[in-house]
Image: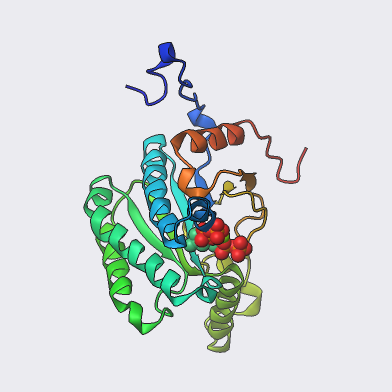
Length: 255
Ligand code: IPE
Ligand code: IPE
Ligand code: MG
């Protein structure tokens, strides 16, 4: 039975009805507020990250149920290395644990895992994590369900500069001419190549900034922000965000 419709008699909120024909094809999420969630409870920040992974599990599952084509989540930015070694280590450890524990189930659900970002550029101490990620990508690459894109060691500016450099190299080698560099060719060198346009960006925890996320790809995305801290962002909160999206009027510069 539906998750929120069943307890009407007990005055529980009804399940949100979403017009599936108006749902976004590609949702991106800045999962923010883990640290504050823990601090509010007098716990170390790493407890917030642990709770954050649980929230992520629910949101991945619900995206899959709703038939969303691609979900891109911001897991670790190129700037997050500024945090303490303890916090970075805990975050990476949780990620590895998540992948090893959930991989069978994700694979069974036909989920395709992709990484956006410079995983090979991560420090050598994280070799175990890197191999786990490469294995997850390899194992799920033929899957045709939800495309789960994990932005890890990801920076939007770095991604744009990297694409420019690749195209410059191809030009210098005489493989392409400068006139051939257009939007489709540029986009083919971004980490998101082949994915549908990002339609919808959600940021939790009340912050209203991009923090170097998908700078190129968000050109016409709809933004949604909520004060809910990421570990508390559940399927109901996600449905509310998606409901708001279904009511937006996207004009793309037209009328
Ligand atoms: C988001 O939560 C998770 C990552 C950045 C990996 P934060 O750790 O940024 O939590 P706050 O913003 O400090 O509360
Ligand atoms: C953005 O959150 C990065 C991730 C969610 C992974 P931050 O917490 O790092 O962003 P700022 O520092 O508040 O801008
Ligand atoms: Mg934060």
